Structures are given as C-alpha cells and as structure tokens.
Amino acid sequence: MKQSGAIPSTENLPIYYDLYIPEDTNKNQPLPLILFLHGFKGFKDWGAFPEACASLSSAGFAVLAMNFSLNGVGKSMTEFDQLDLFARETLSQDLDDVGTVIQALEDEAIDIDTSELPSITIDPSRIGMLGHSRGGHTAVAAAAEYPEVQCLVTWSAVADYNARWSEGMIADWQERGVTEIINGRTGQVMPVKKIVYEDALANADRLMAVKRVQELNLPALFIHSKGDEAVPYSDAEKLFNHCPSGHKELKLMPDSGHTFDTSHPFEEEAFPDTFQRVLTHTRQWFQNHLQ
Image 1 (cartoon, rainbow, N blue to C red):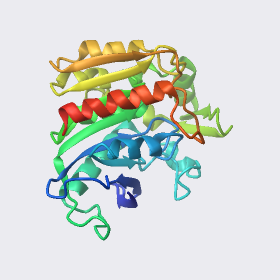
Image 2 (tube, rainbow, N blue to C red):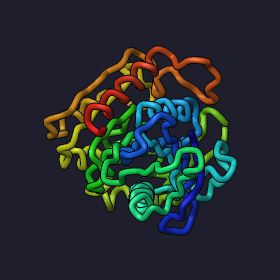
Image 3 (cartoon, rainbow, N blue to C red):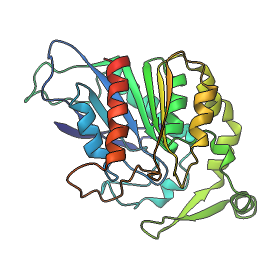
Image 4 (cartoon, rainbow, N blue to C red):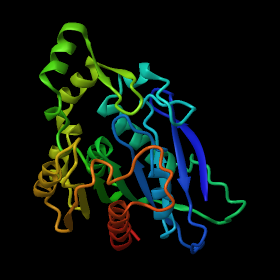
C-alpha cells in the first residue's frame, strides 16, 4: 500500500514523499522504516525505484521514498520544472531534509491512513538508510548525523563529492557564478550555482561521505557495479575501507551501469537480473540488521 504526501522543509518548500506500508504485517509491532534517497538529477519516481520500494516494503518494512526539496522536480513528480531550485540544491539542504523527515516521523507529522490497515505504526528509532549515487553519499552522512539511523545500504554511492568538481565547473563558478550541465535523458540544460560548490567546501567535515563514514559503527553494506560509467566502483571500495564498522560488506556487481541495468521509464514486467540481486542483498541486509 502506498500513501503520498509532503512536509515542509526548513525553507518551507515541500518535501514530497511516498510511504509504502506492507499489507501483511504484525499490527501489534511498530514497523522499522527504510528511508530511500535518490541521486543527482534523480527523483523518487525514477525508473524502477517505486517498484523496488514496494518490494522492500513487502518484506515487513515501512519504506519512505522522498524527493529532496531542491531537486528541481515539482508536482509533476517526474519533470524538472523547477530549475531555479535545482540550481541551488546543496548537500547541506539535502542532509537537512533527511533530518526534517526523521523529525516528522518522531512527531507523527507524517500521516498514515489506517482505514485499510488499522493500528499500523512506525518505529522512528529504527531507521535504515538506502541511497543511490549522490543519495548514497548523503545516506552515509545521514547515518553519521542522526542517531535514529541503525543501518545503511548504498547503491552506486559517491565517496567524495568535492573530488567530482571539474576544472571547467570551477572556472565557470569563479567567472560567472554558475555552471551548466546537460541532462542526457531529457536534453535539458541544467544550471548549478556557485553556492553548491561553496557549501560542499565549507561544510566538508559534515557533508563528505568519505569523512562521515569513518564515524560509522552500524551495519553498512556498499553495493556497486564494476561497470559503473558515472561513479567508479573504487568509490565503494573507498567507503568500505574507511568504515570502521565490525558489520560491513562490499558487494561488487557485474557490469550493469550506474543503475544496475534499469532505466527511466521502467516498463518491464520483471527486474533485470542484476538489479534483482541488488534488491535481494538489500532486503536481506535490512532483515538481518533492522528487523
């Protein structure tokens, strides 16, 4: 069962979310929650993400997939129609958005329609973070930042965002205050303002995954494709090697690109084999360490 809504960010912008609730559950026990974070130029409804969240939920979890408040996708849920917001989507605001969602869960400010499933509750002290790409980078930081997070899984995560700024991007920011990137899927020219770069540099100790992962002693699973064309699998190796947790694993998947052979829109009847394996590893990790 999926329920959708929005809560205000620290800037009073909407953080849109979908909350997946398993239909077959022990109603006397509060559900642990998996919080899913999309990546750069991504959104909660991208590709196979909704089906993946529903699948994870069926294993006995509440799953909340959120759109970052500055991700540039508005009420359409699938179109970048707010490029003015996208242009200033800082890692700090992304991390604050995660905190806003966690606080809303604790305050019971996220409505749960119990008409179909009465007595369903969520345990906000048992949260697992799941993030893809830049969302995986933020998931690592969130796992270190918020004590409610008990478990972590990353898909194709970036290790150090400050290592990704190209010389051309930096030159654009210094000369014009903005750089532009092309969305390969839509062809849109998407601006990224200097504040994104400045925020990442100024707050690196709080924001960079490779730094925050060194604080983690919770169960952490890092999954990456060996053939990732956007983020090299060495990023996953770096996160794994810097993580001091006694419960950590690194899963390197066969060459399946940045999204494990999935694309947008996702119109297949079944998950690609590699993505199904990724999902199985993820589900088992949360079952072993969060339930």
